[in-house]
Amino acid sequence: MENIEIVQQINEWSTKLLKSLEEKLSSQLTPDQIRIYSEKYSKMKDIFQLAKEYLEIEDEIELWKEEMPEGFEYEVEKLQKKQEDIMQDLISLVLPESEYSGKNVFLEIRAGTGGEEAALFAADLLRMYLRYVEKKNFKAEIVDENKTDLGGYKEVVIKIKGKNVGNLLKYESGVHRVQRVPTTESGGRIHTSTATVAVLPEVSNVEIEINPSDIRIDTYRASGAGGQYVNKTESAVRITHIPTGIVVTCQSERSQLQNKEQAMNILRARLFKLKLEEQAKKISSNRKSQIGTGERSEKIRTYNFPQNRVTDHRINYTSYNLQAVLDGELDEFITRLMRIDMLEQLENILKGGNEDEN
Image (cartoon, rainbow, N blue to C red; front, side):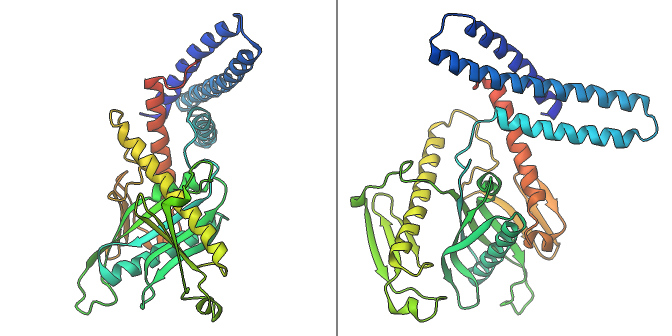
């Protein structure tokens, strides 16, 4: 569905709900009801005004195109940019908040099929995300890692802090595939390897409560960076969640207490994600968007070195600037994924009437 159709539907939808809310507010209500309906009316009024302004700009664009005076292309571009800004405001007002809204995230990368080459690819993905984080002025720290002898990663977990970070990175969850000649390959043959990415929102112990009797905590000597200190004390922590079998390790901090706290944070995030996946399966009657589902079996992107291309299979979009992508230039994918995802959600809301006056 095109933007103009979406906005026309929003306009009709908001007009209908404004009329219904006006009738509610003119009836006998308690003070609490007045407050609730007034807040809904105010929000719906904002939605209505934005949709109206968008449609008025569309009429103005058509007028410019019909007249075609000198410099009309520049004027049309300015108006279209204004429409894009209005569309973003509309989307933020109409769409419900996601589980990532206002939260930091844990991003987990695991080597998949392909042995050492998969581990090296996982290292490439780690560098890609760290560069992306840097470009966005987010903050990232490695909270757990399992390196290989050649500098790859069997598994690495980073915590990323920043405004709207989850709503941007959630589209990265899934299976990433690489096609290239490995450095370990002497015959020049192209190999296909994979790595799995999971993006988990950080949640509080209020959102996910863990029964102490459901976990087993083991400590051991940390390895890797940190000098002699990490090898002299049992500062590393392994937590096993017995009911689900989920195992979390952390050795990035200097103290056992800090590692335990970080590991518990990761465990809560994984349990929260598991809970969301179970809820999604129960709502199988509703069509589930293929964008940003975060299913680990879902192949989402291919990085093809011989052809210098990166293809996102969810939106059938290909970039022929592989190195730039690996250097953290992910916006060309994320922006497209976000737009399509939002438009699909808007379409479902408008069709289903999920936002009503009750």
